Image 1 (cartoon, helix red, strand yellow):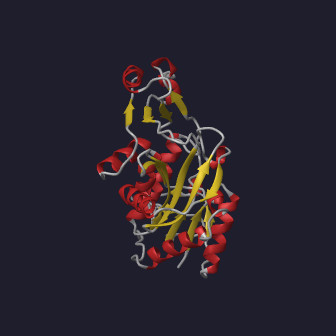
Image 2: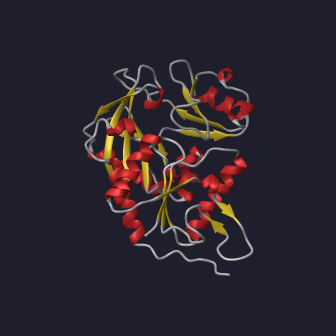
Image 3: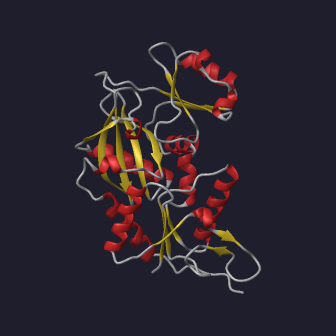
Length: 302
């Protein structure tokens, strides 16, 4: 069983996944999706570095190499081509597309009947201004998020229509979500790591401001995860179709939780410091079980 590991950045995560794979007796081929070639004219047209005309038995995806919209589209196309050939890919490209697009995530969560803060996604500034005029006010803002974004980058609180940036600044998509403050005034939310359908670890994220991402200075704290939170995170991951994910929750002010986001390429270095579960080992076990249960990838022969 030959396994590919795509981990273009993040040496800590790459090292943990490598160690977990080797502990299972698997020596993966490290590669970048940026180096995959499509070449027609004979044999399998998808050329994955390190596999000499064959396809991997499975691909564990930690990150996708950055680049232009065209480059990202090609790399997702490569993942779709691998899946269509029978290669087990974690996370699958469909799940990545759904979770990277926050509008798609919110739609799927709402269709599944799961609790999430009220959300509006529009293309025109005039439409966004009408929503803010109706739904926002000083002390009760809406959160403006980039449609494609992670680690708390690009977030803004919007209280008045004039607070909205121009269309070009948001790539002509306004994603607005109701801000849910805590009754105790703390800046705190929760991250649940879901793998292979189970919530395996969780933490509190606490900040000195309203953005609590660990990447932005938030502090990971231990959390005795309530069963209701675990079940909600598992349901959110299932709705989006992710094999492993970081699901962000917020307390809803009524004794329960609401889903903020589902992340298909989650970091877990902060979470690992406050939980006993070996997260990389859990991801690798689930991934290898899926590979072993799948059919052998087919090849196009000359």
